[in-house]
Length: 330
Image (tube, rainbow, N blue to C red):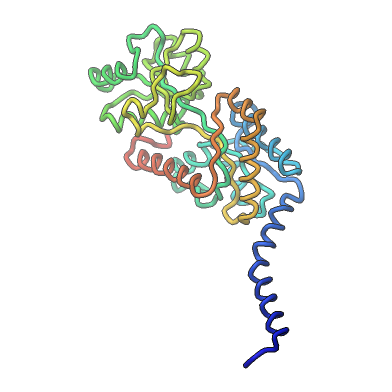
């Protein structure tokens, strides 16, 4: 069968339009989202760094995407109440979550069979910030370095009293990672937040505390606490003389708290791309970066496969500690 040349040209044009139609449609969708206000679930009560950070990025999304992003605090159960509400929402991009390590990685794993969701129910959009961890001792303690801490624990099996901000927090996990990597046994002591743990360290009830940098930095600066190690890939400008765990040959100790944007699993890809682009633009904004740093965080943009791999590594860490019996729901 043969076609008249003009007919052949028409068929080619139709085929080309068909091939380019999908990306053109996707681009159009991406350029119009969001067309109405977006609900941003923050899985914690108002106040504190997690809430402040989420509000900062909701405000930045509003600026960069030209639509209102409305924060709703849904606290409770280590962030699981808010996260569960997000994953059950319509996957249209108009309900998202700006959450932290607890609801995204830790809480549902610790809950086990009673958990109402898992990471598989979420679509990773973008990593926004990380908060370096720090291991501190009292300034006048004989434990003046990380090696002092390790040697003391070696000489006093089961005698090192190591405080942390609560079960399943990054500080707690870092202590358990140390135990596992070094084959040592400590006395992990859980507190309801970093503040009480630090106060007991100052009072002499503890030998060391593993916590996030903002909770200890000021006391380190005024000389009441001594930072012996930083849990972060590189040294921290505010503590330039303190070695990282990598430098101390302890790369297994690597969990730092983070803030990230997540969406329901079936959210369209053009929504993910739009939010990821807005996240990148926000973190390129000097004002946003300064506010992140003022809260003790480090701007840490990731999206796509890189972000998914980051989450998978943390999932594996928590899962391994739970499977070994070192980390439990209690």
